[in-house]
Figure 1 (cartoon, helix red, strand yellow):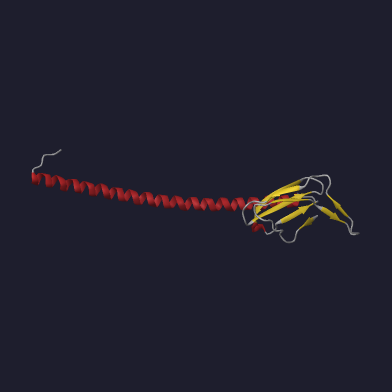
Figure 2: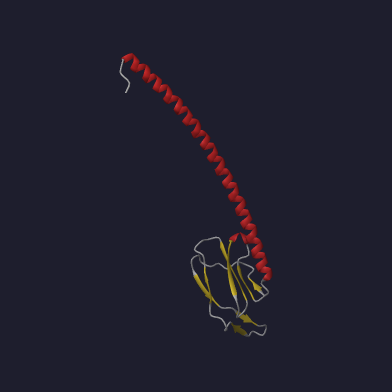
Length: 150
């Protein structure tokens, strides 16, 4: 198996085609010849890792992950179950954290909404009281001027 020890930078928004090659201790090389060029469309955003898991001359899968993993790069030609399990565990943890953040945001927004509703309700009550007072003043002025009610 091979996994990069350092991330390989890919330009955001780029299209990358590649093939793997095996280099043997005697210097001989073998290119993948049973699969077409592998292709990756890199997301047009920064801080994203593209992980390519594959078997030499075999199946491949591309996973897009936030850079926080710190394990960006390519891996190949091994039993990928361990890597897949780690990716799924990390994704589950990220999803749980995202859900907790969204729930906290929802609770905060709900509290803000409740406070705004209470404030507006209080303002409406004050305006109704002020309107009643203005109506009484208007009624007194009409009586003083002996203007008939409309």
